[in-house]
Length: 341
Ligand code: NAP
Ligand code: G4F
Image (cartoon, rainbow, N blue to C red; front, side, top):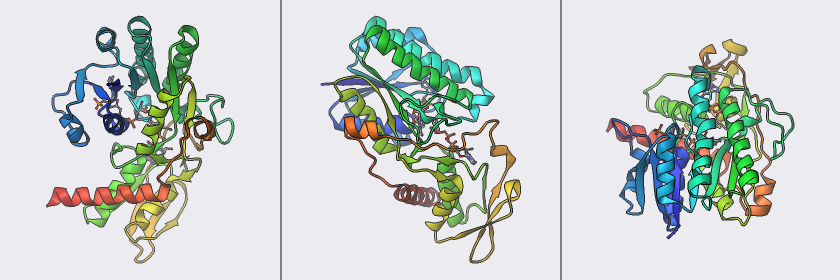
C-alpha cells in the first residue's frame, strides 16, 4: 500500500486531496496543528477511514518534522500547509515567511536527511507572478510578487527546484492559480460573495461589502486542481507545472454571476469607492465598496497557461467558472437552511 503525508490536511485542498488518495488506496497521514477544538466539518468522513491518520505537528517545528519523516518515510509528501491569506501576510510578514518559506526548507531538509526517496509536492502559487510581466503566465514567467505572501511562495518555489537540482530529490512545484469550492475559507473573496449572496437570499444579510471590484483572477475548481498535484508525482520525472483554467474574470463579474443565481440582476452606479450595486428590479442597494478591503499593493490580473500540464500530464479542468459559482451558492443556501432549522 502506498503512503502519503499531507501537510495542511485541514484546509480546502488538504481535504479534497485526502479523499482522492484514500479512494486510490493510499494510507494517508495528515499533519495537524493541535487545536483546543478541532473544527472537523469537512474531515468527518475522512476521519472515519481506517487508512487515515492524524499526526500532530507544525511546519515551524523542525524536530517534529524530522521525527515524523524519519519514522514514516512516506512514498509521497504533499506540502499544502501555509499561512494562505494574502492580506494577513502584511499584518504578520515574518510569521508568514517562517511558515511558507522556511517551512518548505524544513520539509526538504528532513527529506534530504531521512527519506531521500520520498517524492515531494510543493504548493506554489500564481501570487509569485504578482505584477505580471507577460500574459498569460507560464512556468518561465518572471516572478514579481506583490505581497509578503507572494515573496514567501517565490522562495518556496525556488528552494524546491534547487533541492531537485542539487540533491536529485523528486521535488515538484505546482504553480496553482486561484481555486475555489464549497470548502473555501470564508475570508477569500469568492466564498465571501457566495455566502453573503446566500444570506441575502435567506433574508439574513442586507448587503455585500467588497474591496477592489476590478481585480481579475483565473479561478478554477479545487477538486480538479488536487488531481493535478497527484499526477505530478506519478510522472516519471519531477518538474514544475502551471495549473490554471486559462480564463480571467473580475471580482465584479463573479459578483454579478453569483447574484444571477438567485435571480437578481445587478446595476452598477458611481465610481471608485462610491461605486454601488443595485437590484435592477427594485433599486435595493446590495453591494458597496470599502477601503478596508483594498491591499497595500494589488495583483491586478492573473491568467495562466497550463498547456505543459495538459501535454505532459494529460490534465485539464472539468468544472467551468459558472458551474463552480452555482455549486458554491447552492451549497451555501443549503447550509444556511440546515443551520436555521
Ligand atoms: P487553506 O484552506 O488556508 O489551508 C491551509 C492549511 O495549512 C490548513 O490546514 C492549516 O491548518 C495549515 N497550516 C497553516 N499553518 C501551518 C503550520 N504552521 N503548520 C502546519 N499546518 C499549517 O489553504 P488551501 O486553499 O487549501 O491551499 C493549500 C495550499 O495551496 C497553501 O499552501 C496555499 O498557499 C496554496 N495555494 C492555494 C491556492 C488557492 O487558490 N486555494 C492557490 C495557489 C496556492 P489549520 O487548520 O491548523 O489552520
Ligand atoms: O480571494 P482572495 O483573497 O485571493 P488571492 O489574494 O488572489 O489569493 C488566493 O489565491 C492565491 C493564488 O493566486 C493563493 F496563493 C492564495 O493562498 C489565496 O488562495 O482575493 C482575490 C482578489 C484580490 O485581488 C482582492 O483584492 O479579490 C480582491 N477582493 C476584492 N474584495 C477581495 C475583496 N478579496 C478579499 N479577500 N475580500 C474582499 O472583500
